[in-house]
Image (cartoon, rainbow, N blue to C red; front, side, top):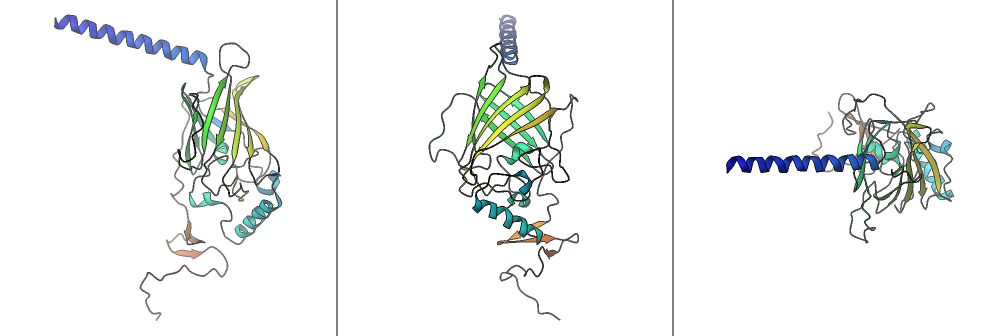
Length: 291
């Protein structure tokens, strides 16, 4: 009896393995091969790498179609940074950059399942995880989800050439968003109402399966019109690529107290970040008289 039970259990396990193997093979045959590490084609042009339009320098060189009000936000941000402040760049405080900044990360990984596609953004200072739900769900009603920097993304797989295999992922991302958010280190702003919408098309280049496109369009009240770019990523040929550990708070010398940004010196002491900047309010510390 024991031997017979053992045989039945073994047969059931083997059947499950065959079933799971068949399901995996069907999954692999239906979805595109986006495995591996994808490296952003995002030349710095003498500037920082993280920017929305990868073909241009950051800040005013992006030529964002900003409204006059938000053009002044950018100008004020850069003027404050020139004095030693952070401007409109909260990511300098290790606050997540959110959308669309995440999609400029130097390294990406895509994990595809039938229900969800995961995008892992690996920058030198932050590690972001984005979920794109492809299970046919509806948009959540007001109050059903908490605000996030990355928003809520719904996607749909499309077989454009009719060969039985998906080749395009269309995605829409809505709020509620947290903010403020900026496109890049200059503080190039998104609207402070945090009501952005993003539409994307992900697909492999028809002439090069190791080139991935993310055609992304921003709809935002800080813009006079939708703003579209084509972000491209090259697959790392190394099948076992190097992944760095990212922790923005490690070694970050920016210290924000109240509304002021200060600087932590190499010897661990608080320093002003701007000329003639007053010290923070020390009312909760016992003051020692100066000798």
